[in-house]
Image (cartoon, rainbow, N blue to C red):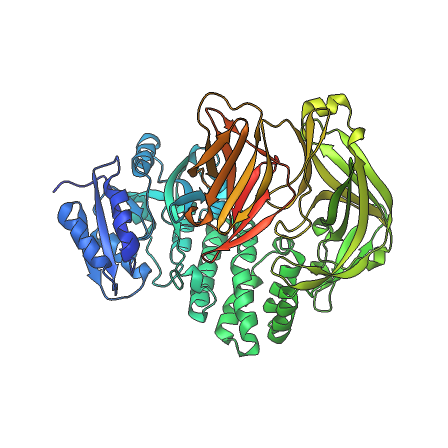
Length: 630
């Protein structure tokens, strides 16, 4: 019997909707010399029927059934059936790019490394977005490296974006714990135990984000059994690193405090003193081994909550967690030192050695009004120092200015003294939360721009800064994207449009630009977006309206009615492709051989609800028409 080059182990459970595309992506690999071992972990749907049909059509597929014993047991069963020189693992709801296994195996053949791993994309519906956990570690390729020389691989704790040399796997004696989160300690043990590792910048795995309720382990993360298995996995991984790569334990702890301990805090805070003491013991056992410097990587609020969990003060944890969720946790900030001033957040439960917040003091500023008065753009806003109480600072000197991207040129707008005030501020979810902030005002006359500055047609970002009592902070002026104020209409000077714009994350700027097309009327007609305007040059061809989704480049086309240089367009909102993540942003272009980004003159911002979908008609970062769905 010939030994295949690669054995691909696919455990699956109740993934009837996804297992077919998963297997198709494996059997269509450019590396054809492989076997696919499908292990049904007691599925209650028709997933096994789908696998059986694929097996009948492709002799490389082997099918193993077992009662439901968990994915760890299923992987171990698959390993016992695997005969290839190399091993790979794929979850039954994910997919693999066509050349992934060929690239990974070829790399191992070339270098002799023990394992090869590659970049990952998250799969939302049919849209791929980069995986934040893998983006930095796989930014560029590295051959014959090791986790000790490339510490960012400590984030690469997933099993499935890799190919392992089977002899290496057996030499380490690797097997899976029979519980959830079984892959993390095994993936780390492989990284630590490898003689060398190949890192591919190319994407080798598509990791699906499933939307249906109760669809995955991570969506049930607050369940006691789920949390228990997560904490056991954390402890086992910490032990692997502590024994095999202690210099990486701090990197692991910083990630774990941020992610896994956040889940533990939320779950145990919900239970309070009724929480299972065994669960608390697991969390405390891990936290006992965390070095002091790793604690400082946590934001103050999370640091306080994890500290309460570590000290088993569960009723206080529940109360403090509720305060944090409601925006009521506002520790007072005090300072020490003259030459090197350090800042500390004060809370009755926070010990002094964990209280420093010097690196966390950042401005969070937002506009509350912005509008033109003739050629003068006038605005008012508030600047808060994070979520801290800075009343001891009393008064600060505030500056507001514009800074041009690229050149760094600045235009001062205002300077003055400001004292903190407390007001109820509307949040994006509709709640009113008490906020302490320093108010500011500014005014900018377009006549201030020189001819050279207008000619550059640049982008000028709005900044605010504060100075006082040793506190020196500055940052861009932003605010929640979906809250007022409305974006004012553009103004024109010397043939150049000055366009107030707001970035996707809410930061304000002033863009200088020319316009080949201008939208003068824009609004809603029933469930349709309608707009009209004028083009400077209609060209020779028939224009079409092109909608391009920023998330993934997906495009849709609609007709444009043209009369001379005047145009009119209608977009039925019900026909827009459904969003693929929390928000979807469609840029509106007019295409008549070249793409024109029409400038929107109107300040009107309409919100429409169509078939339970919420749309916002807005202006983009260059003043063009933007259609958002949230």
